[in-house]
Amino acid sequence: MPDRFARYPSLEGRAVLVTGGAGGIGAEVVACFAAQGARVVFLDFDEAGGGRVAAETGALFLPCDLRDVAALRIAVAEAAARIGDVTVLVNNAARDDRHALETVEPDYWDERMATNLRHQFFCAQAVVPMMRRAGGGSIVNLGSVSWMNRQGGMPAYTAAKSAVRGLTRGLARDLGPDRIRVNEVVPGWVYTERQVALWVTPEAEARSQASQCLKGRLQPGDIARMVLWLAADDSAMVTAQHFVVDGGGS
Image (cartoon, rainbow, N blue to C red; front, side):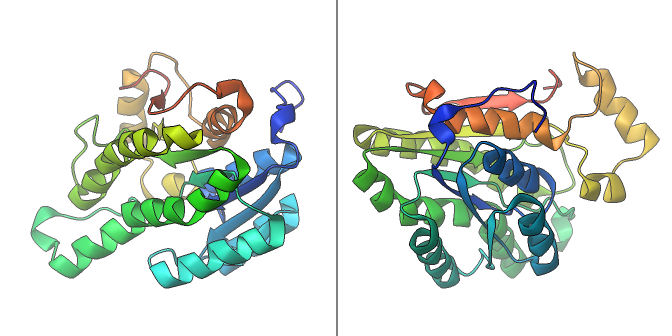
C-alpha cells in the first residue's frame, strides 16, 4: 500500500476475516489490512491463488468452499483459534458468471445464491458472538452496481447482489445495540485480472468510461481503501449505509 494513503492505528493488531481473498478485490483487501498491521485470515476455494496471496502478504490462508455452510463454520472457528476473536469481517467472495434467463434451473439458482449471498449471512452469524464478546465490530458486505445499472445477462447474480442491501440494513438494526456496525461497499466495474480476461472489450470499456464522471479504470485498491475506512474506528458512527465506488458511473 503506497505511503500516500491513510494509516489507521485502530486496525493494528485487529483480527480480520476476509472471504474470497485469493484474487481480485479480495486479495487487495487482504494486502491492505496486512499493511495496516492487522492479523488477517482469508478464506477461498482457490488453493493456488490463496497460497500466493498468503506468501505475498503474510496473512493466514484457510482453504474453504463457502457454499458449504458446515465447512464455513469450521473455517471461521479455526480462524478465531489462530488469530483471536474476529472483530472485522469482510464478506467479499462472489462470482459474476454470465447466464441467460432461459438456461437457469433450480439447482443453478440455488448455487448462485450460495456463491453470492448465503455465505455473507452465515459468516456474519458465525462472528457475531465474537464481536459481542469484544464489545463491538465491523461487518463490510460487498455488493455490486450491476443491478443498480439494470445490467442483464446474469439475473441470478444481480438478484443475489441486490439482496446484499437488504441483508446489510437488517443486520445493522439487529446488531446496533451490540456496537456491531454493518455496511455495504458497492464496487463499479473493477479491472481485475478476471474481468480483463473475460469481459473487457474496447466497446464495453468505452461504454463504461462514458458513464463515469471520473475517467479511468477502477482498481482493486480503490475498493479496498473504502473497506479499510469502514473497518476502522474512524467510521465508528457509520452503519446501515452503502458506499458506491464506481467513478460516478451509476
